[in-house]
Structures are given as C-alpha cells and as structure tokens.
Length: 214
Image (cartoon, rainbow, N blue to C red; front, side, top):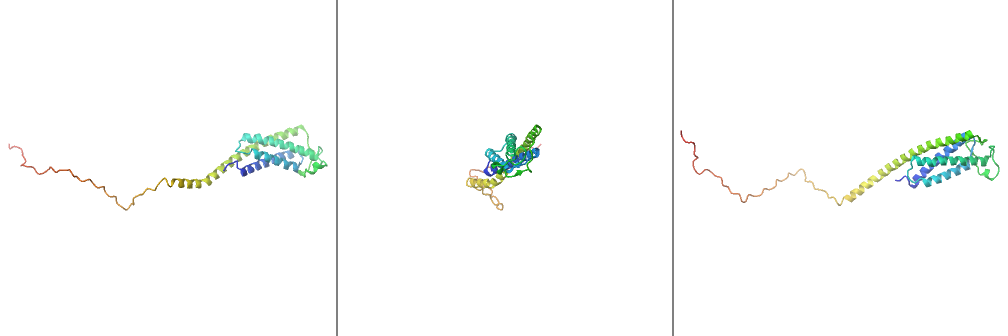
C-alpha cells in the first residue's frame, strides 16, 4: 500500500487544508479583531485542497512541507484581508452590493473595524511564521507515522499470499523424503563370501623340541 494512493492523498490533503486554513483564519481573527466572510474561507479552503492534492505525491520531508505550508498560510491571510475589506470595508460595516451578498456572514465573531497599525501587521506575520513552522513539524511526524502504518498493514496483508505462493511454487520441485519407520530394525549388510580363502594352519608335525638337559 503506497502513501501516494488516491484515498491516502485525499486524506493527507484534507488534513493539510484543515490545519492551514484553520490556523490562518484563527490567528487572523484573533489578531485583527475582525470576522471573516464565510465565502472567502470556503473558497480559500477549496483552493488550498486542490493545490495540495496535486502536490501530494509521495512522502514529504519537513523542508518541503514547511516550504508549502508557510506561503499558503500567508496567502490565505492575504485573501482573508481582501475578503474583509471587500465585504465589510475599512470601517468594519457591511458593504452594500452584489459582492456583499456573496460574503455569507462572518466567521469568528461580528465584523469590527480592522486595525491598520504597523505593529499589528508585523505581529500577525510573526505569528503566521511561528505557527506555520510548528504545524509543518507536526505534519511531518504525521507523514512518517502514516507511511510506517501503511507499510505494516501492507506487509501483514501480503504475508499469507506470499507464503501460499512460495509453497505452491516449491511443491513440484521438492519431493518428500521417505523416512524409515522407527519400529523396524535395520538389517546388517550381508558380508561377501570368502571364496578364495585356504586354511593352512593345523597341528605340529613332530614333537616340540624342548631345552637340552643339563
């Protein structure tokens, strides 16, 4: 089972999108004090999902994840700022017209006047960078864990099949070795007949000579 399979890519892209859009929208609302248009959030999420799904081929390292997550988070923040200005205007009130009908309400609380101070902008940028790097590290751990899990499941699923295939392939080649029964005693091998042996030994021909008398 590969991590680049279609349903795995959908799961990874959905998790990436949910984390990216949620963190970007939450930090934007928290630091700007202004609600976000629902349509802007939905369109941003759809765009992030489509891009991430197209790039989610194999397993990615921390560098590649961070290089994609942080710019997308900053781009989502820019879109949220544009949506706020389009739907609510600089004073925080709803703008009448066709575009305001597409805003669909506010996410994160009622619209308020956006703060345009330089300190708030730098604070928002630093928050996005810090949160983006932490989120990229968390996604990297999730990528590695998912890859190990899929590898384990694939090995467990293919092991019985590989075993059956090995047995089926090795069956005709190796014949069973006959083992003699334990109860039967082994026969001693027959000795060859001594055909050409001649007996030459017998009793002595004469009296045995003893020592001379003193």
